Each structure stands twice: as structure tokens, then as C-alpha cells.
Length: 306
Image 1: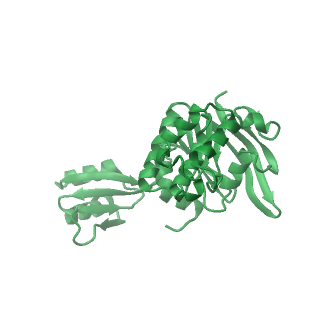
Image 2: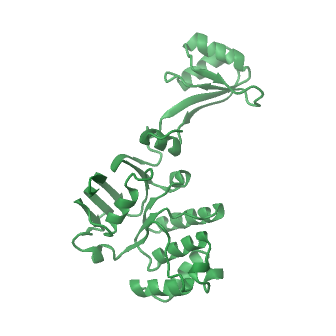
Image 3: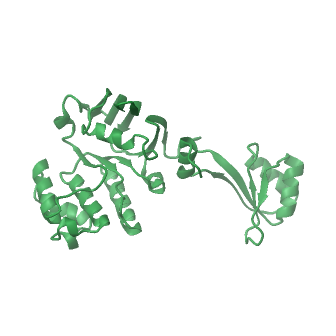
């Protein structure tokens, strides 16, 4: 079996509100899957159904081939998770919280020391969780999810409350876990992080999975424009308008150091632009197509304003 998560026809309604509609997806073992959506799109409802925290109205969830509906305990035996707000026993220390989690999952005593070191919680091990900063409460929640070395991590906003250095540390941790075979299903509003981490990305909108694509998949990103840095931008613009019939050309703002032309015509061809300018004796320092990033793509697909 190569699937860590298999979802088929998953739907959930709360009265008249259809939170998730006929959702199907599959997450392969060892990959990082980024699950994106606007607030209210159905992300957290989906995650809660994956973990058996709420029952679907229709559909089926399998984790490592086991049905969450029919065998929740067996399905979750290899799963660690962090859902919504980070929680802990407030009057217990970091170590005591982790010892309780260790006992619940039946892990060895060494597992607590390991996750404390991995999440850089050593200086706070004897501190009550109620006295932790938001970022360190998030680290503690991640540490609890990692106790027992789960084969699947389901993480809802894992970088919530972390400073930039903490975000980088968590990114490297997840890369390390994935490289050692751990499957990660993560939801996040930090799209740049998802773009760097995820092997595959799914976007949910109004309860429906509207797109899935692999990292670097050909054609997965829309070309926004072609940028040309030329020795003589006025001459370059005239050549492109006259010889290629291009109309949507903008120059860099007055006073800009770079002599850049931004060409938005859908018909603009990089090879044709290069040939036209070189043929007219215009020197080219840079000629590149510019594609939308994940944030721009996400906003376009979900109807948000840029």
C-alpha cells in the first residue's frame, strides 16, 4: 500500500450549511501535502473528519488502509496531530505534559527527551505550560504530536505564533521528518512556507477541492508577464511594438535603476522577443518569463482580491 490517506466522497453538513462537498483526495506515504483554503472553506472540518473527531455526513476516510469510521483506534495508531489552537495541561510543566502523552501512546521514556531536544524546549522543560509564550506553546503542541514517532502527522497551522527563526526551524524539522519517511498533511495560511515545503498542494474553496498540483508541475502556474532589461529601453519598446505588434508594455517607474520593460501580452514569446531585439542591435541584459507565485494563484482561484 502506498497511500497514507485515502478520502472518497467526503461530505459534511451542519444543518443547512454544507461545509465539505464530495471531497476526494489521496496522500502518498512520505510526502508533504499542503491543504489550503480561505477561512470557512472547509479545511479544519476536513481535518477533523480525517481524525474521527467529527463524523462525515457521507463518504469514507482511510488512514494506512484502515477505516476511521469502522476502526478509529487502529486507523490513528500511527498518527500524530495538531488541530486548531495549541492546548496543554496549564498547571503541568512541559516535561509533565509530554510524559502524559508518552504514556497515552505507549512510547519509551527516551521519546520525551528526544522531542524536547528536537523542538528546542530544553530551557522550558520545567516551566508550566501556562507560562509559555504563544510560540513555545505551539512548540509544545508539536512535540506532543511527535511523541511516539508517528508515521503520519496531521498539522493545522503548525507555524502559528512562531517568530521567523522558529518558522525556519519547523520547516527544517518537517523536511527532516519527510526525508525519513514520515507523511505530513498540513494546513497553513503562510503560503510561502507551503510553497517551499509541499510536494503536492490541494486548494479547497466553498467545501470543494478545486485544484491539486505537484510542486513544479508544468503548466501549474500562470505566466504573468515577460520582463526585459535592455541597454536602451525606449528603442527596445519601439522594436517590440513595431516588429511583434506587442501592445501591453510598461516601463519601470521613472528613476528606477533597472531599464526594465514589463510585457503582459499573452502572445509574447521569449524567443521571438530575443530575436527581434538582437536583430535590431539592442543589447539584452535579462529576459525572463515571470510566473505567478502560490499566493497569487491561490487568490485567483479562490476569488480573493490581490
